[in-house]
Length: 159
Image 1 (spheres, rainbow, N blue to C red):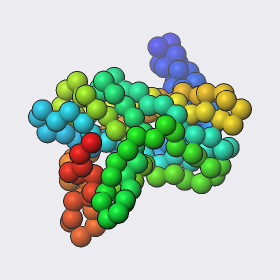
Image 2: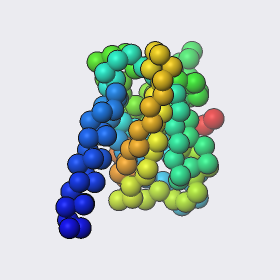
Image 3: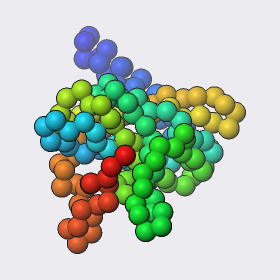
Image 4: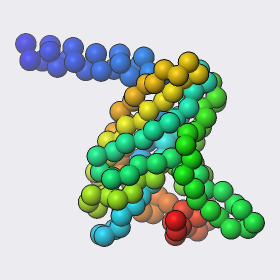
């Protein structure tokens, strides 16, 4: 009987995920070293209809924000953005050196092999909000390496 209940719960969960208006692929969080108080979360988002990512939460961080990294007069700068547009059917990549989730005021070290829960809040053109829970595996710090083994710009940024 417990087995049937478990199967029913898994099926219901899968159905709820299938109903989401945004497809989330390959979520991951960069591991930290001891005493590090911030890290990034990355993933690919594809909305079925025009919408935007408006809020992020995670129990591992005191603050979770959407950030953008961009060149400004030959200087890489990072800034918080109030929301991230998700045009219908177009994948939007949250990645090192571009748009990403910034997890700050970490409550503990985030280690390779951990799984970090992240809550994403999306808003449609009609103002209706949808909340999606993501379980993001933690990858090693080396995952921040850019092409040719050079560190990605986010590796040493400052606020």
